[in-house]
Image 1: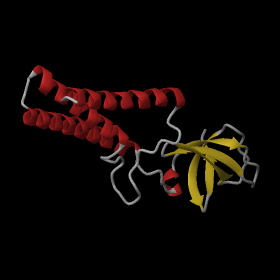
Image 2 (image 1 turned 30 degrees about the vertical axis):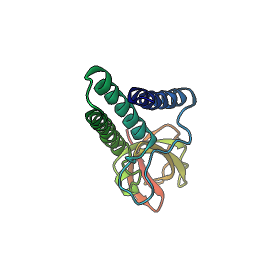
Image 3 (image 1 turned 60 degrees about the vertical axis):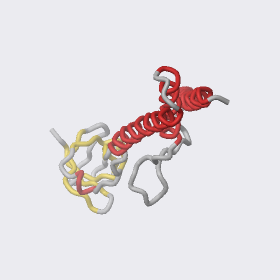
Image 4 (image 1 turned 180 degrees about the horizontal axis):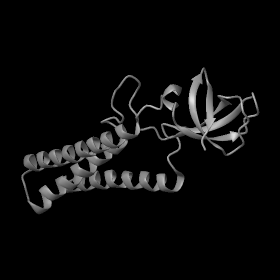
Length: 177
């Protein structure tokens, strides 16, 4: 098997895998796809993830084809050019994915105390001296939590209220007029 055929097969394998995964994600969603490293690692994506490996194969094959067919380099120089192309492309892909995922991996933890002063909506009416429910957005997630009026008054559904205090998991609110 000639070197050109090996470069071509490597290029087609990497590109084919990338296209297959892209189409599968488009048609079937990303359910069950895990691109994260093993527990204990600080990187949001592995340098040995299938995406990075496929990019290396595509770069290696494409760089090798150019070195062999277009530039007509010797075998050693061609393999070196193919390796460098694969490493540069996969390294760039790894760097970009790390930057993208690091931004989306911000922790979802928050303190209820951070919500004091925020204006939220009543989703279950708060009866006089009773408990209802509010909806709040924290770290991009909607959370429904028990709420009571600070002054003990009734507050209707859909009313805008300000969080004044949090005791345990109960939010004490007041009507915003």
